[in-house]
Length: 302
Image (tube, rainbow, N blue to C red):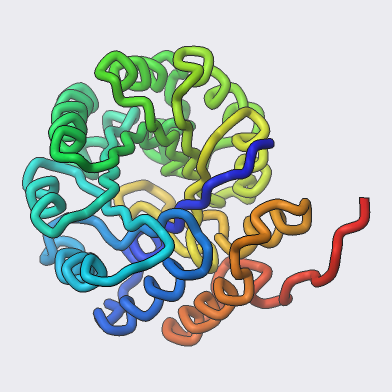
């Protein structure tokens, strides 16, 4: 496998379903530590209405502050509509993530739009963001199944992928919003995208709702995915899906990669430290493993 990029989505996906709102200063501390740990990308927040999702109400402020600083990681933000894009451009978000859901039910619950309308509008916004000089990533949400609708046809998922590719958008995330993915499916979908566009940069966003998260992540990497989206401590879940559950834990994936001699440039101790602080803040044990057990130290023998 090629060295994998890691996109930390904890400050957005990890916090969006939490009842407790993390104060901005505390959130800044977590993001700074993540962004300087050797991770490639850190997702700061999403540009949604603060009255609808108070956990994300300070996203604009976070970018205004962090944009004046220098960090190792690229900072990303999630956009769902034109107003969100306007806000993201205004505060200088360098990497803008957008997406449409392959599930009609999830699409309407999440954005108030049909899949067809959302895809069309996402493509227009992504091209506008790119024209404004920003890096963009487009995603297919509920790509591997939906908590409301069950199985989503592969043809439906790939029709959205084809629409993205035809628009010249080649950084594509396949998102397991409901956690229904299994390794064979993930492997097949990643390969299919790369068959359609060999130069595409495929990202896998996998949830661990039913315990297949890490296995599916490794299947994505073996199939040629360029990037994996994970969350500190395994926190996360879409509030607009039927069973919201966490992501694969960032520190668990990094530990596994380092056991194979990969991504030794990432400071695993720093990631574990952040997760322990997050666990203390929420006053409960998080789903991740390595922050509780500690890493296996020492050189891996062949």
